[in-house]
Length: 117
Image (cartoon, rainbow, N blue to C red; front, side, top):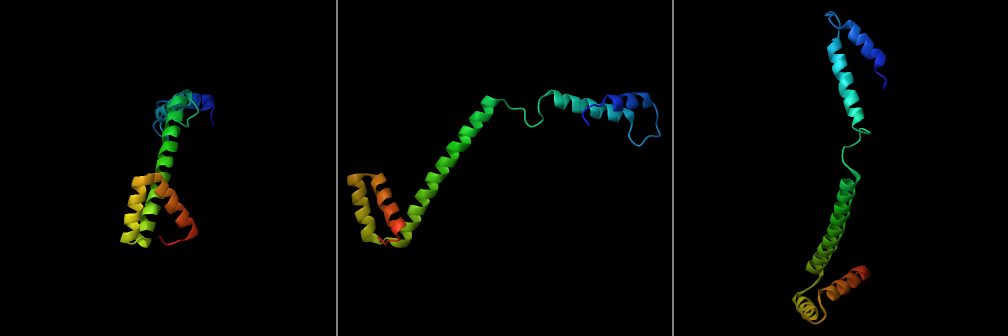
C-alpha cells in the first residue's frame, strides 16, 4: 500500500479511542515514517552516484591486488614444495641478472607444465 490517505483518515477519526489493538497515533506515526522514507528516494540507499563509483573502483582495485597476491602465494608454495637449495641459489642469481618479474614468468611456465625446478 503506497496511498495511505484512507488509512490516515480512519486513524485520525479513531484518535482518542482506547479499545483498539493498534493505537491510531501509532498508525499515524508509521505512515509519517513511511512517507518520510519514500521522500528520500527509492529506498535502496542514500549514497550518491559519485560515492558508489568510488566504492566500486576501490573494490575493483582490491580484487586486482588480491589476485596478484594469490598468484605470488602460489609461486611461493610451488617453490617451497619443489625447489632444493641449489635451485634457490640459481633463481636468486637469475633474479639479480634479469629481475624478479622474469623469475615469476619462469616459475609460471614451470608450474603450468607441472615441471620440477
